[in-house]
Length: 381
Image (cartoon, rainbow, N blue to C red; front, side, top):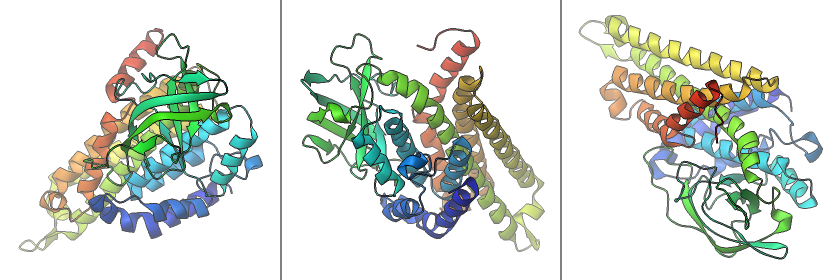
């Protein structure tokens, strides 16, 4: 599968499966199993898996395109997909083993959904600093942890779990493990009932005395932070930015449709024809959306040819996208007025979903702190 084929398959599934179910899944907080199944059948769960494991072996440009297309149809499916791709990246970055290779082949075949389980109640949005600590017994570790935000909780086939190494000295001396959700001691703590992204099953997960063998360890002891920082953070930020772009595009398209079709019957004109103030607002929405798309394209270029500014772009792009998505969806709500608030346009759902990015680690405030440190040559940690 090449980039064009991946884009075509994503667009087809988004139009046929994801978008038509988005409102119902949001209303009922229903996990979009059909969408994930179709993405798997199309080979898109294995988009970034190496060809030697049966995947498409595609890079950041195809990833960015796929993410924004899914997000334009439904933000919940996009977040499930993003967390899956990040979990897959952690597995792929692990030392080669028969077990990890088998998992990657199942992912490439569309038979395995994975996700990240990093954030903990005690360290909140500082996802890179788990407060739980593994205990070691020979070739096994035992983990007690309360993971506060796990997308696809109770739905994924594996969790990439972080915990402090048994002999770790600092908050970043963590280890990553691949854990089967069916393992004794793993349970979804509470059902998910959020303001936005209501269909992504983002619930807390408790791990109580969970035993995991060294065969399912994804990093060397105490080196999980390196994978979080170098593998997960850049691609997650890019993916989250693409989710924001999808929100901007969806809100702008829905607003254009409303301004073209809603009528002032006494004037014989559409809202867009009658009110220049609304035309100005939709223009601002489009400009902001196009600026974000250009920023993402520039960031993808930095990922394809890494240089000194690559990490800076990775930090900037999520912060910029979060602000753009909130601005554009807020303008869409105001521009469409009662039609948006009464849920006739679908914009209200996108508005709620866009605000979820503001509280998703690393938050915009944390990213600005990182960006400022980077500009001043101050170590991030």
